[in-house]
Image 1 (cartoon, rainbow, N blue to C red):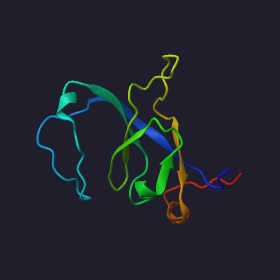
Image 2 (cartoon, helix red, strand yellow):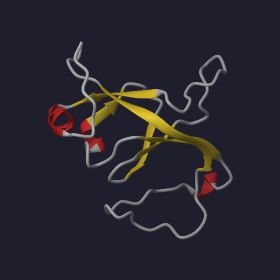
Image 3 (cartoon, rainbow, N blue to C red):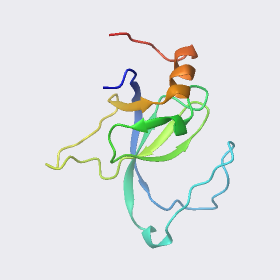
Image 4 (cartoon, rainbow, N blue to C red):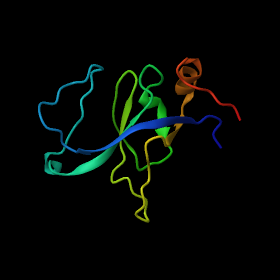
Length: 123
């Protein structure tokens, strides 16, 4: 069993195109997404979480739900692709206000414990 777990709140859910319209450029943190032009008319549900690079680097945390996919990060928000947002039984999987759980590595734990913007809960 892992000693630390990091949970973030879903603050927005919206269906979006897999391939965005317009010109795609690098984000302010030097990253841009890769897109498959064959998926130009397909959509999926995107979730925005309430943390960003000021709190922890996404490379230092691992999704507990392996069906989630990282899309992008800013200083204070992280975006995930949650696919169709359905369970195997066809029910809605995530809603606004739900928590997404992560396993943090050592560096993530160090940053999260030192962040004044992250609530800490000891059990």
